[in-house]
Length: 128
Image 1 (spheres, rainbow, N blue to C red):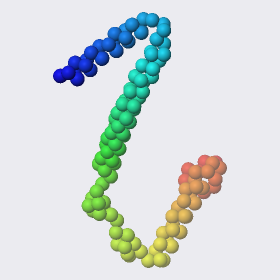
Image 2 (cartoon, rainbow, N blue to C red):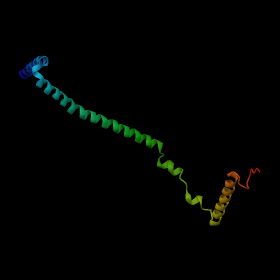
Image 3 (cartoon, one colour):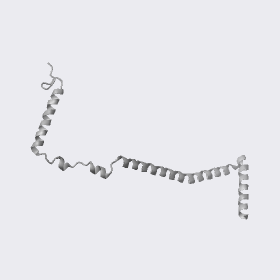
Image 4 (tube, helix red, strand yellow):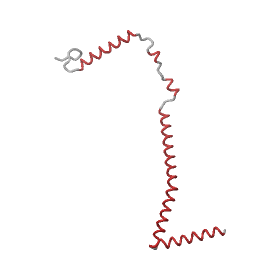
């Protein structure tokens, strides 16, 4: 109990000194050091708290983005149901058939290009 009363008495004396010093111009050095001490305390206590808060916010944002991406992309089971079996897709196609279809597609495209060019001869929609 004695140490508590001594501590309270010292705090009271410092408070009274601070009030007197705040009003007199001779205590500029005291005010400067008190200001620096307050700034340092706020900086060294507030900065880690602020960094921790930002770190937690960034981690939460990353988690939300991960969950959104996971919800957007189908899972492996769904992908396997819709996967194309390429072996079955071209199983009946023979080389001659492919060549014939390519030639036919090229001829159709050539005929279409001639029809679309102004002043071209042949094809549909001729006007002279």
